Length: 396
Image (cartoon, rainbow, N blue to C red):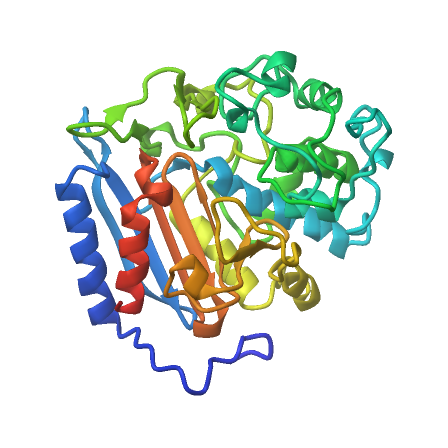
């Protein structure tokens, strides 16, 4: 064990015997596929640095009867967020920016204001922790709101906007609250993308490639599809089975909201701006590599101190809407109260997901990393499958 390897609790009674874990997860996958709540999935589980479960199940493309493969490529949607967040922290490690720096130095065209019209100061830490006062258009009222009126893209639909133009429009809308005073899941990671590009002096795509992808020797994590034949089709839960998302669909994530615009064709649009919050393409295996890198201490990307900062709760006692028992670190949620969250994960675990059907979590106390990429929204992000999978991993 390396000096950076987290210590396992001395009295942990949990068992992660590979054969038993495999049997339990297989049962969950088979049932979920049988119920037609998922079309296809790739599930990977690492324990103490060893891959103890790996399986590609179901279909990558149901209409063409293409089986799912372990190296399938997925539209990462919000799985992009922790990747972009790590890139920003690499710049912190390099001394090019600090967590509490005012971002206006690098983004002079992004000029957010408070409700009273006064200029607002946003820091890198607030972007990473989603405490910057921003929101998402898909969370606005079904009747519309300022993001819709200004034509701000959430980063999931095809748009002719450049990243800079999208941020200019965003900067014209008063913030939801004074930065640092509240929390709200938001387009902050797209602003972060603009900041990363400016600090690094390149495009966001080049920055992520140089800061994260190349050091980890990844090959498929990019804003472009490296191999179209491995890109999965995208599906949306429906009755009696999920339907294929062929064109722009507006789907309410929460009742009464405007709805998220799912547009699978964006992944193949060479003109789509680099969305740090939702635009990356990648595989389950490469994302597992990134998570395990962080869990083991961060090398060669980050020092342990920055990993500790990233994985600690940054939102104090603020309540995270739709995430009871969890706080937010610098790029993903951090579990504060397993009972309140109704989960078998240990306190201190990290978790997030992706709208196209992805979930993942890291339990540092148990040296456990789980990645489940599916091609079915929203079951694979927050459906019963994610609960059943977590329980299967822990033997609950």
